[in-house]
Length: 266
Image (cartoon, rainbow, N blue to C red):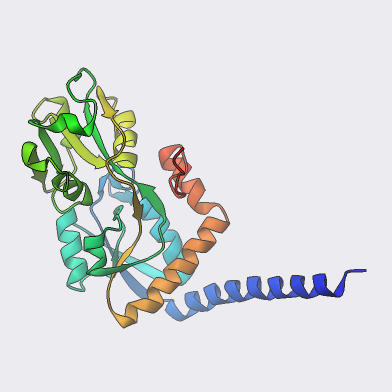
């Protein structure tokens, strides 16, 4: 026979599991037919990109899984990254699915969901470039990044940023080719993006040095009381996707590794 104390613990655990399931089902029923306006660029493989007319990618699938759990339809809004954050701030978007890193500056304007991925600002150069082996070697070099991105901000925040010729561009699209053609000396963007794109493109490029930052990736929302419940619902859905292995499966599909858990440094 089961010990009474053990039986009581099992009963509590069962009730908690049923409660979480019911909360998810109730949220789906309540939101059925509602539209979630989500912004993305559609230009950053493998997070958000188009093949033909189909929008796909890791971020796209993650937010689609969340919306499905919560009973929302998604109205996708595509524009450049700086435009996305402006539209979010003005209330034209509910959130953004485009590898948005949680930074101190952004937390002044937005509240964030729990992290669904982890990344860092990485420097890449041409394979035959032996002049740049670390971030310190960027002095006197022409280094590109995306306007309004945390990666550009991380470059500009370096102690010796005034010694770097930092160029910012409206979009990520085509930047690997700019580097390959020699129009820039180095390019800074998210490590997960760059490693996947280098492998896909086959271009003679390489990552150099350690990432110059480590950051959480999450969904941003305008600071508004009405968004508190939506953030809580997103967090519940993300917890379920972590628990059942869906986030790991999607990560391995696009990155061949699990970027949804924070790696502990040795």
